[in-house]
Image 1 (cartoon, helix red, strand yellow):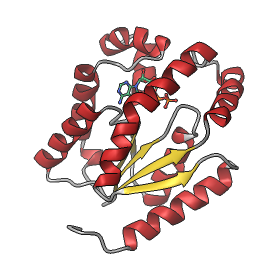
Image 2: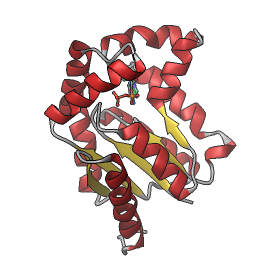
Image 3: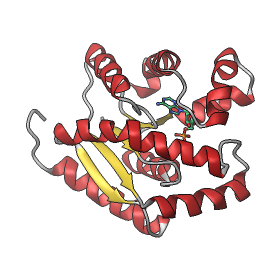
Image 4: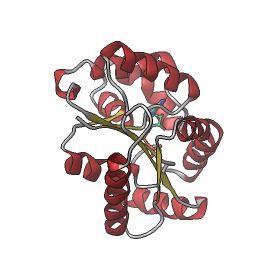
Length: 197
Ligand code: ADP
Protein backbone atom coordinates (compact mmCIF):
# COMPACT_ATOMS: atom_id res chain seq x y z
CA UNK A 1 0.00 0.00 0.00
CA UNK A 2 2.69 2.47 -0.93
CA UNK A 3 1.76 5.78 -2.49
CA UNK A 4 4.68 7.68 -3.91
CA UNK A 5 5.28 10.71 -6.02
CA UNK A 6 8.42 11.50 -8.01
CA UNK A 7 9.49 14.99 -9.06
CA UNK A 8 12.52 15.96 -11.10
CA UNK A 9 13.60 18.37 -13.80
CA UNK A 10 13.63 17.34 -17.47
CA UNK A 11 16.66 15.14 -18.08
CA UNK A 12 16.92 14.06 -14.43
CA UNK A 13 16.10 10.45 -15.34
CA UNK A 14 12.75 10.71 -13.60
CA UNK A 15 11.02 8.25 -15.96
CA UNK A 16 13.74 5.62 -15.58
CA UNK A 17 13.91 5.98 -11.81
CA UNK A 18 10.11 5.88 -11.63
CA UNK A 19 10.06 2.51 -13.40
CA UNK A 20 12.65 1.01 -11.05
CA UNK A 21 11.03 2.40 -7.91
CA UNK A 22 7.59 1.21 -9.00
CA UNK A 23 8.91 -2.30 -9.65
CA UNK A 24 10.73 -2.36 -6.31
CA UNK A 25 7.70 -1.22 -4.32
CA UNK A 26 5.30 -3.35 -6.39
CA UNK A 27 3.04 -0.49 -7.51
CA UNK A 28 1.95 0.74 -10.96
CA UNK A 29 3.18 4.10 -12.26
CA UNK A 30 0.94 6.85 -13.45
CA UNK A 31 3.13 9.00 -15.69
CA UNK A 32 1.37 12.09 -17.01
CA UNK A 33 4.05 12.74 -19.67
CA UNK A 34 3.73 9.15 -20.97
CA UNK A 35 -0.05 9.34 -21.03
CA UNK A 36 0.03 12.61 -22.95
CA UNK A 37 2.59 11.26 -25.45
CA UNK A 38 0.53 8.09 -26.04
CA UNK A 39 -2.60 10.18 -26.60
CA UNK A 40 -0.76 12.46 -29.02
CA UNK A 41 0.57 9.46 -30.99
CA UNK A 42 -2.86 7.85 -31.09
CA UNK A 43 -4.45 11.16 -32.07
CA UNK A 44 -7.17 10.92 -29.41
CA UNK A 45 -9.22 13.99 -28.47
CA UNK A 46 -7.00 14.56 -25.42
CA UNK A 47 -3.93 14.09 -27.62
CA UNK A 48 -5.14 16.70 -30.07
CA UNK A 49 -5.71 19.16 -27.24
CA UNK A 50 -2.34 18.47 -25.61
CA UNK A 51 -0.02 18.15 -28.63
CA UNK A 52 0.83 21.83 -29.10
CA UNK A 53 1.76 22.25 -25.43
CA UNK A 54 4.06 19.23 -25.47
CA UNK A 55 5.78 20.36 -28.65
CA UNK A 56 6.38 23.83 -27.22
CA UNK A 57 7.58 22.53 -23.85
CA UNK A 58 4.67 24.20 -22.04
CA UNK A 59 2.49 22.67 -19.37
CA UNK A 60 -0.75 21.18 -20.57
CA UNK A 61 -3.50 23.36 -18.98
CA UNK A 62 -4.48 22.32 -15.47
CA UNK A 63 -8.11 21.55 -16.33
CA UNK A 64 -7.06 18.90 -18.87
CA UNK A 65 -4.28 17.47 -16.71
CA UNK A 66 -6.29 17.37 -13.49
CA UNK A 67 -9.27 15.70 -15.17
CA UNK A 68 -7.02 13.09 -16.74
CA UNK A 69 -5.30 12.26 -13.44
CA UNK A 70 -8.58 12.18 -11.53
CA UNK A 71 -9.99 9.74 -14.04
CA UNK A 72 -6.93 7.45 -13.87
CA UNK A 73 -6.68 7.52 -10.08
CA UNK A 74 -10.08 5.90 -9.93
CA UNK A 75 -8.76 2.89 -11.87
CA UNK A 76 -9.00 -0.22 -9.74
CA UNK A 77 -5.34 -0.99 -10.51
CA UNK A 78 -4.26 2.07 -8.56
CA UNK A 79 -6.37 1.52 -5.45
CA UNK A 80 -3.66 -0.50 -3.72
CA UNK A 81 -0.85 1.99 -4.28
CA UNK A 82 0.86 3.90 -7.06
CA UNK A 83 3.79 6.01 -8.10
CA UNK A 84 2.79 9.31 -9.64
CA UNK A 85 5.42 10.49 -12.13
CA UNK A 86 5.19 14.07 -13.40
CA UNK A 87 2.19 15.23 -11.38
CA UNK A 88 1.69 17.57 -9.59
CA UNK A 89 3.89 20.16 -11.30
CA UNK A 90 2.17 23.36 -10.19
CA UNK A 91 0.84 24.61 -6.84
CA UNK A 92 -2.80 24.42 -8.05
CA UNK A 93 -2.17 20.80 -9.09
CA UNK A 94 -0.98 20.06 -5.53
CA UNK A 95 -4.27 21.39 -4.17
CA UNK A 96 -6.19 19.37 -6.74
CA UNK A 97 -4.30 16.18 -5.89
CA UNK A 98 -4.92 16.81 -2.17
CA UNK A 99 -8.66 16.89 -2.91
CA UNK A 100 -8.55 13.74 -5.03
CA UNK A 101 -6.65 11.84 -2.33
CA UNK A 102 -8.92 13.02 0.48
CA UNK A 103 -12.01 12.01 -1.46
CA UNK A 104 -10.57 8.53 -1.98
CA UNK A 105 -9.33 8.25 1.62
CA UNK A 106 -5.69 8.04 0.50
CA UNK A 107 -2.51 9.70 1.79
CA UNK A 108 0.89 9.95 0.15
CA UNK A 109 3.73 8.13 1.89
CA UNK A 110 6.72 9.93 0.39
CA UNK A 111 7.72 12.42 -2.31
CA UNK A 112 10.99 11.74 -4.11
CA UNK A 113 12.87 14.68 -5.60
CA UNK A 114 15.66 13.97 -8.10
CA UNK A 115 18.23 16.74 -8.28
CA UNK A 116 20.98 17.51 -10.84
CA UNK A 117 22.77 20.65 -12.04
CA UNK A 118 21.33 22.27 -15.18
CA UNK A 119 24.53 21.53 -17.14
CA UNK A 120 24.18 17.77 -16.52
CA UNK A 121 20.50 17.90 -17.48
CA UNK A 122 21.25 19.62 -20.77
CA UNK A 123 23.94 17.12 -21.76
CA UNK A 124 21.59 14.23 -21.07
CA UNK A 125 18.80 15.84 -23.03
CA UNK A 126 21.03 16.19 -26.09
CA UNK A 127 21.96 12.51 -25.85
CA UNK A 128 18.31 11.47 -25.46
CA UNK A 129 17.29 13.63 -28.41
CA UNK A 130 19.72 11.69 -30.59
CA UNK A 131 18.59 8.30 -29.24
CA UNK A 132 14.82 8.61 -28.92
CA UNK A 133 13.83 11.48 -31.17
CA UNK A 134 11.27 12.96 -28.76
CA UNK A 135 9.77 16.01 -30.46
CA UNK A 136 10.14 18.03 -27.24
CA UNK A 137 13.89 17.29 -27.01
CA UNK A 138 15.36 20.29 -28.76
CA UNK A 139 17.62 22.79 -27.01
CA UNK A 140 15.08 25.62 -27.07
CA UNK A 141 12.17 23.47 -25.90
CA UNK A 142 14.34 21.80 -23.28
CA UNK A 143 15.40 25.18 -21.86
CA UNK A 144 11.78 26.23 -21.69
CA UNK A 145 10.88 23.05 -19.81
CA UNK A 146 13.80 23.56 -17.43
CA UNK A 147 12.84 27.19 -16.86
CA UNK A 148 9.24 26.16 -16.14
CA UNK A 149 10.52 23.55 -13.72
CA UNK A 150 12.49 26.14 -11.77
CA UNK A 151 9.67 28.66 -11.82
CA UNK A 152 6.67 26.43 -11.10
CA UNK A 153 7.70 23.05 -9.83
CA UNK A 154 10.16 24.35 -7.26
CA UNK A 155 7.13 25.50 -5.28
CA UNK A 156 5.68 21.99 -5.41
CA UNK A 157 8.91 20.65 -3.92
CA UNK A 158 8.76 23.31 -1.16
CA UNK A 159 5.20 22.38 -0.25
CA UNK A 160 6.08 18.72 0.27
CA UNK A 161 9.31 19.63 2.09
CA UNK A 162 7.19 21.75 4.44
CA UNK A 163 4.99 18.72 5.08
CA UNK A 164 8.06 16.68 6.00
CA UNK A 165 7.48 14.27 3.11
CA UNK A 166 10.44 15.00 0.85
CA UNK A 167 13.19 12.50 0.09
CA UNK A 168 15.87 14.20 -2.04
CA UNK A 169 18.14 12.03 -4.17
CA UNK A 170 21.19 13.19 -6.12
CA UNK A 171 20.32 12.27 -9.71
CA UNK A 172 23.55 13.41 -11.34
CA UNK A 173 25.62 10.20 -11.27
CA UNK A 174 25.42 6.72 -12.73
CA UNK A 175 21.80 5.50 -13.18
CA UNK A 176 22.52 2.20 -11.38
CA UNK A 177 23.92 4.02 -8.33
CA UNK A 178 21.05 6.48 -8.34
CA UNK A 179 18.42 3.77 -8.25
CA UNK A 180 20.16 2.01 -5.36
CA UNK A 181 20.41 5.27 -3.45
CA UNK A 182 16.82 6.18 -4.23
CA UNK A 183 15.45 2.82 -3.04
CA UNK A 184 17.56 2.94 0.14
CA UNK A 185 16.52 6.53 0.88
CA UNK A 186 12.81 5.84 0.37
CA UNK A 187 12.91 2.64 2.45
CA UNK A 188 14.67 4.45 5.27
CA UNK A 189 12.13 7.25 5.11
CA UNK A 190 9.17 4.85 5.11
CA UNK A 191 10.61 2.98 8.09
CA UNK A 192 11.11 6.14 10.15
CA UNK A 193 8.34 7.34 12.45
CA UNK A 194 6.42 10.24 10.90
CA UNK A 195 3.88 12.53 12.48
CA UNK A 196 0.38 11.42 11.52
CA UNK A 197 1.60 8.20 9.90
P1 ADP B 1 9.95 15.85 -18.58
O1 ADP B 1 9.91 15.63 -17.11
O2 ADP B 1 11.17 15.29 -19.21
O3 ADP B 1 9.66 17.27 -18.96
P2 ADP B 1 7.43 14.38 -18.91
O4 ADP B 1 7.35 13.14 -19.70
O5 ADP B 1 7.18 14.29 -17.44
O6 ADP B 1 8.83 15.00 -19.27
O7 ADP B 1 6.38 15.47 -19.51
C1 ADP B 1 6.37 15.78 -20.87
C2 ADP B 1 5.38 16.91 -21.15
O8 ADP B 1 4.06 16.50 -20.80
C3 ADP B 1 5.60 18.20 -20.36
O9 ADP B 1 6.57 19.04 -20.95
C4 ADP B 1 4.20 18.81 -20.41
O10 ADP B 1 3.91 19.39 -21.68
C5 ADP B 1 3.31 17.60 -20.27
N1 ADP B 1 3.01 17.30 -18.84
C6 ADP B 1 3.39 16.22 -18.14
N2 ADP B 1 2.95 16.28 -16.87
C7 ADP B 1 2.27 17.45 -16.75
C8 ADP B 1 1.60 18.10 -15.69
N3 ADP B 1 1.53 17.57 -14.45
N4 ADP B 1 1.02 19.30 -15.94
C9 ADP B 1 1.07 19.85 -17.16
N5 ADP B 1 1.71 19.31 -18.21
C10 ADP B 1 2.31 18.11 -18.01
